[in-house]
Length: 257
Image (tube, rainbow, N blue to C red; front, side):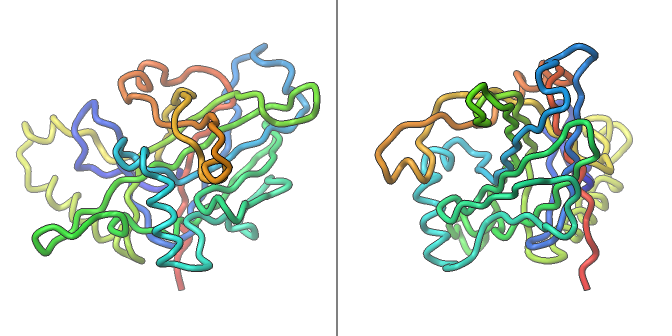
């Protein structure tokens, strides 16, 4: 993702990236397979689903109710959109009216592919007011990729990756990034050693597929389903760099008029 990570994150903690509401950011889809890995997808398309999900477990377990409340307050809006004119190499783009936080598309791992996303919810929309102030909740950008099965359906799981984000009102992410940078500049050299540097791009960390929670559509039908949720970061860190169709998100901000 071409958006800089925050410099105010301690060593060994997961990176945190600030985004502006409604701004287009590039996610570069990369094929990081080693030679000979998963040969069955050579020359084939794969399907990726990009979602905005909650980072906190407490909110993950009430995601359906949280999203329904957001939908009630923002009728007709979506949490996540794909900026189609900006995107490159994405095919058969689909959005489900009942899944406001997800977009899906096909792409060719052998070709340059970039999906430009827009996140329309902000972190403070899911935070109750406390003592007159608000602290926004973190989200995750999550990418799940699937290959085609023998019956032609894209349901064979290949890879999942995610990163932690916070979303601010327009230009708020830039101000927050600047504030974090200024705070770090005031710290002593010894204190700075406890923090990781800010990187120009955000790399998604691999995560595991885990059966938990009904998704919004099948919740209505009272059916259970599998969904992907963030792995424990320690597990993810240990898996970093493993092969599969790894998605590296390069979030490139598009200047606003």
